[in-house]
Image 1 (cartoon, rainbow, N blue to C red):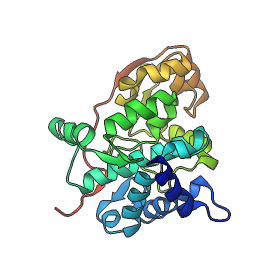
Image 2: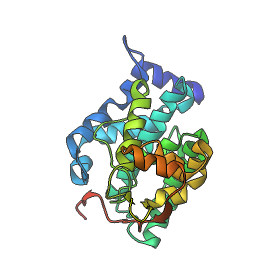
Image 3: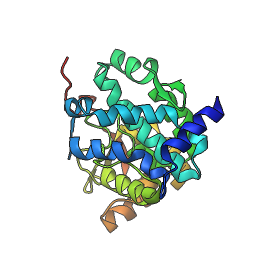
Image 4: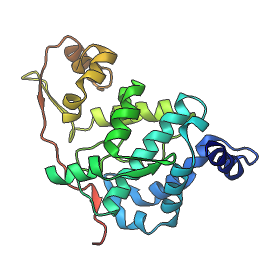
Length: 245
């Protein structure tokens, strides 16, 4: 079975000049055509045959057949974002507590020849990579989630893309804001839910955030823990144009 899947991989992709980043080419085109700023055009993605073909490729190619941490991370991040879109197109929604159970836990997708939920892809595969910036790269189709980029993640540019996503998210006042007079950091619930990931990297959530804020004096205050944290309410409304029912 493994040999058969690898054979498909080789015959499909081992053309002259092939790189693993080519795998994500059609997804990149889909995102470029259907993501504008904060708005995702779900009907447009659903009508684009390139999206269906990309989902098929995610099921055909195994992460073990990719070489290097960056290739695998890009593959898993793009898979999460593609599956999050597919869940919306299938009629699931994270807008309610019950809806989130279906959207994240019970709905399954085909990845590397196996079935997996969004929850398991995030918690069993992505988080164990000990890369906290993935929390700003994966999008769960909701207003308070990190923005869905209009381009796919690629191994050859992954570090810059992750840095850009982290910096954009942390400095977005609709997701994080700072009361410098009263020394209060109003942070996204993402920093609460995944506190251990950020603290493991930088010692604390505030120290992690300090590494990305654009104001030097604010960064110093965060590093010195002069600020208290209050977490913002999470907006689970859809981040774009809803698909036709």
